[in-house]
Length: 339
Image (cartoon, rainbow, N blue to C red; front, side, top):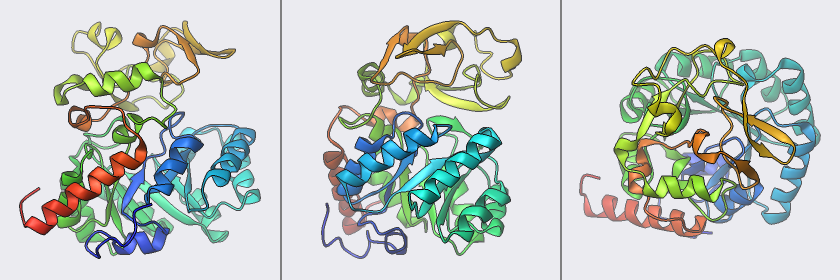
């Protein structure tokens, strides 16, 4: 845990969420499991446990393990608009049973889902890709707006740059705004605070850590990547609504598209099993990325990474990543230098 941080780093968002530094862990499905979430929390940040479309049973085991590893606050990440309503209902009910006090939502804003968890007194952090979505989330009762830019890895909902989007949202709301997308260093944190945001959310920077549940192959691809190596495509679309684009490091699947990266229909794509997690098949063109437990053709799976991957040069413990980000941010702010 990072103690006694200067007030220029400890923003009002930190007080709201109960963290020491305004660095959030994105709720990466499959990757942001309890070990990674606990490491971020214990290092002073604020994690979202990635439980996208997971069973209530897995939510229970992950939350139980997370609480055994830390007594610090966290959110559970769900995606209401990309989850079967029956499963979503079961997920939220299980979270209530477990006493979850904060939810991180993404994709389309569903006011009923927000109202349901707000009725139980929970905080709602909502990730959006446009200023209009931010307004809808605020009107529905969200407490924190996460502005996700097109630079982000994984599923990308908007087409606006992170800082341009965040600044526009900051000008139109009194809610805390968090910058997400392409932020991997303390310089990005300092820049975010300078434009009026109250924190940053990181995915790629935490994927490439010892504690993440990503497969070592995925982590190594991130470390080796440059800023130019990622592409935005909707070829990895199975399990998600049509048109849901993702940012990945290019591979044999994207290379074979000859530049036709967008416009794919999941109903026309084959379901060929290319990898497995235990007995669970992972299909070519699905959104499933390689995890610690995955075997098979890892190269053909989506290797999620944001444009900030070019700034990540090693796999380190979470505590080291956060400490370096905070140190670099303070150096920028103390020196008065443009980040």
